[in-house]
Length: 90
Image 1 (cartoon, one colour):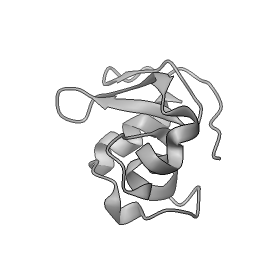
Image 2 (cartoon, one colour):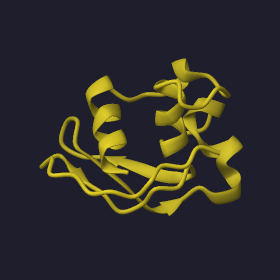
Image 3 (spheres, one colour):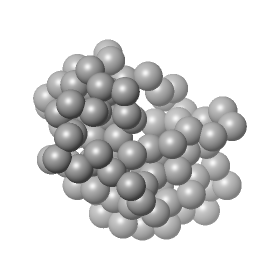
């Protein structure tokens, strides 16, 4: 599973709080996102959008940006700007 290092960001659009590949990403007004602290856990291959599920996860973002090579990036429902905000937040 992809793993991102924890870091903070000064972007007003992002509220960082988690960094595991199974962490859920929540969307707020437009392209603002919050990562974690909850996750889909062992249900990643059932719940993550890249595998056909409904939950947006950090794994989905990793697949969209080519940091992970499994699943299907075309299934991920997230704007590029929001995906970039998610990457900056973890």
